[in-house]
Image (tube, rainbow, N blue to C red; front, side, top):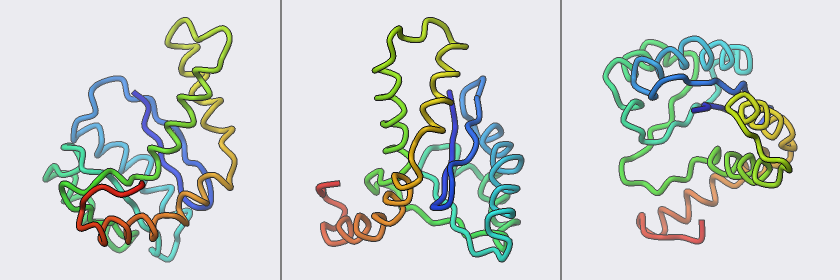
Length: 152
């Protein structure tokens, strides 16, 4: 599995996750990767971090860690049952499409990992900036539809 993050400013690193993403693994990613990047990118503590409703995100140890670091950035509260509007899913789709177009296809995990990284870092800045800028419209549409389906 590969875990990634991005902001309006830039793509973050891709983290190769060897095992199932459980709360302990996710917490180490938050502490070792997310936190330093957020401090660097948003030194005034005015950054926002969004996560979806994966079970490991709601674990008590993860929530406690975010509470301990709430002055460093804001964790967006994502209600349960909310449609997945996580903008990173659009970036993963771009990565998957780029890999499907490769000839020849990656034939082992090392080649696949290399292809994922190459596709990730070739995503144009304007792509993730537009995704970030579209979030208020998408959230407004979900609210207007009272959580029902939208065009997003």
